[in-house]
Length: 326
Image (tube, rainbow, N blue to C red; front, side):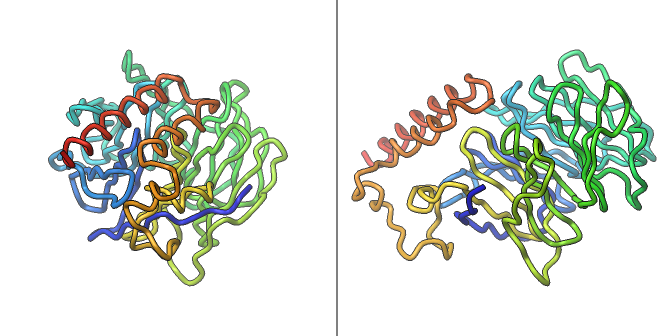
């Protein structure tokens, strides 16, 4: 596992609840705010638009590569909202749960199923296509004060989940814990099929888990003396990592070259000098950097259509830049 490189620290007026990204856009929800903020995912990370959902109580965000959209978990309306990528309109999916149910977090499987974590070690498997919902109680999970915090798919019928004292693999077919370690977590994202990144809500750090060897391989970010990290999202289409920390959203990359690209902002301490023409002077244009970003992830396990849509977005964005200059 390589080191992380800070590209941007985004400071907001409210504490950040969660963030995700899709095709060069960053979606952010904040505490006690019924508006989703959408930013450009490149320098200078400007606000692009807002998506308002009246009275919404933001709980979590997740990207669906199957549906090419972003889903939002809403604890007030007890539902999931689909944020359509191009129009930024929303579609509501009621969860039909009781008002005393606790909606804690969510993730999306490769096939587009939505995994919602409830209280008391229960989850919902929701299909937005036919709107079928299955409630599952995870048996045999070790005791925890707050129950499961987050769960995400790591294979057919298997979930990687965590709570405040343990991280474990749960087999849905056998209805049992497959393996576990005494490492607490708050949120999980997958870098690939072999590597998970976990926010440790007690140790105030991010750490990587080798899923095959079943061992913690590295502590990659640590904030001694500060509040614990919140949610974490790895963007498979561009390799960026987004971490929420109080009222800030940190954008990282595992690629050292991204520090010298259009992705790194001018006000981060990762760059001594950052000028718009720097990429061109180095022989790499803004356009080619965008194209290479998607090319280097062609062999990842995200759908090929995501990469193709990304390249189309690149071309559209570059045409807009040329139009502005003309």
